[in-house]
Length: 467
Image: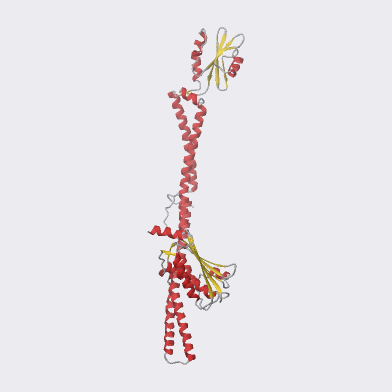
């Protein structure tokens, strides 16, 4: 498989990195050698045999001098004077160890070396004078010689430091280049994950990364096509539901109209009863059709308008409306409030009230006579919670998963003639508009519990951004 023109590959980049690293280290080494040669030629560095030549130059003077004194010895050298007969050191600045080595060899050789130190023996009339000097390169500056006495180790340390620095710079540059490519891949995957499909990434010059980006973009296109088809199917379904609901209204209106006309014809008691049944059924049909139309347009028509609401007053209204829902049914309605005194929250009070009332209506339907319904309102600094619980038979496992789906009804344990699977769907949509969640569960003591949780902190931040 060939590589597109203008594109590289990971193999080429690695070879380039290796060559660059080798050339860089070789260049640093060559630079150090060149600087060392320049320093030697300039006299800043003394060569290894510099002290030996200097010793040779003063040897005649030391041999002919009447008396050896310390000021005759060049700087950086030590000396020792030995008696010819006793081999005892009579004067000098040499260490005892160096003096002991010199004592063993002064009669046998005029020059000898030991541990990178050179020794020169000057044969005098009654004594031997031994000069000790370094056989290493040294700095010419006395200050540098004092603090950096070993030039070779110092130079080696500088060379190693420069080589490590070069390796670090070259490796970091290569790693940053790869990191930029990986960052591009991460940004693409993050955009796809958030369903932000309008992306046009910058193309890398490395073929393997470009191939991965091509794969991600193909996946993005497939996802975009799938989502578009799904959205179109949802749109068509909503249009069909809305159209069907409007069509249902026509025969429902005809039925109600004719039933009302029948009431005007002085019917007998039995006919009046049947006519009332027709009118009641027609009213329910109109009610359900209205809810159906509202739900079919929920995504487009329902918009949330947040405003800071007095939670204490809002909770009272909730309790009053829930009590009206219970009506003549003998149900004990309990309202519990915590943390809402003198507290306001950014909510759409009307939409949220309707959502709670839909949940409460379900609770009333499924709560038996002399049962109990609790409405618990809790507000903290970060969240608002409204929970409605009943003493009915509770949700089945299937209902816990599907209760918020449109038209879902549970025929097994929570069937009611007035339940058509729209109340919890609407409540779920309103909670979603508040960026919250609707939690359905069964109580341990029996009965169902539906809780609305709204994150107040996130809503406040969004309001501040749009302000």
